[in-house]
Image (cartoon, rainbow, N blue to C red):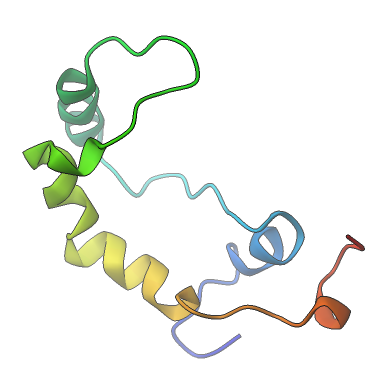
Length: 84
């Protein structure tokens, strides 16, 4: 972990390869994203980055600052917390 990483994210990334971070988006932002997505059935949708609201969120400083410390960082198998 480095000085810009988030200690609440690190353990989940080690074990699961992803992390759920609460409180990143406001209730209004969540409503706006849900409205842009519309009804989703089945496993989900592809190509969401063509939606302007999704593109804006994906390029937001807040989200990029959250994920940047972990981009391109893959721990060797021997250093992972769980056996795979």
